[in-house]
Length: 383
Image (cartoon, rainbow, N blue to C red; front, side, top):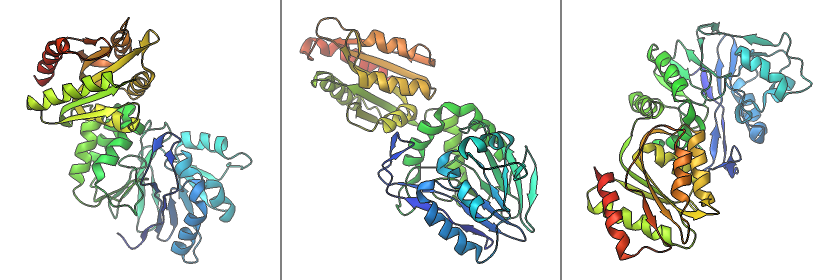
């Protein structure tokens, strides 16, 4: 790392749910950086949960200096939550942000007069710190409308806001892609087009490192990370395989889903993953649905509709813009099967979804007479 650029972020290993929604068993990092040149710039703040620890890191890195700028790339409270504390400590500091972020600041911090305190930057604007210069690029809807990223021209670092982020504290070492994928599809999944726009801007830059707001600083093999982001944001298939998601009440539907998985593996399908939507992490299920080329939905009927865990899963896929996949349906019903109809209705608004035939209907428990239909479906999937 450039000796004028220091990491001052913090790990949060006490948090149970990120955005009050996503399980983070290995915590999360709130990344922040300090550029100490002739002028001193703080690159983003952190969640108020870890403000005290972050302020200690900031004070130590400043080594007696006073910061001139706080660059706010993203207004979400897990990053901008400590802005008021910075202003209280350093009264003359200027907030550098996009026009939309400047509008949002009073929404989050009532009682602070931001008039004359903000420096609003637009696409391509620069901020000289001395030997280091920040160049700003707007990244609306990655994944909020006010987002921007910053490119430091000397060290060739892209401060990428939430792009290229991942779940998991920095103190927990793990493979990047799994938790980055779960983070991407659940946080940014709907916004593939805006992510593509940002990647096109990044392609024009000579980038030596990517510093996101969550997860590790990326300093090597950048083509790998950028390649995955390109794949994900184009809604392309990353892994040739099948993901089976089932929602079973008394185990009958689960048995069918597991039997189908056995058939597909026997047919040589390269990867078959299966998830119990009643018990497994829903965010991982969303991740796997986007990762694989084929999705199998197996659900019990319920109140003339579909069992709620499946409804919830499909609602998540709708919200995240699920598209361009093959989908197979299995329903179970003891007297009036309704799950397939309900699942089809929820899939209809999605783009480029191919429904495979046959739809398999099970009556209460799988029987030998159900196997031929299941085999025909497995053959269609294996194609």
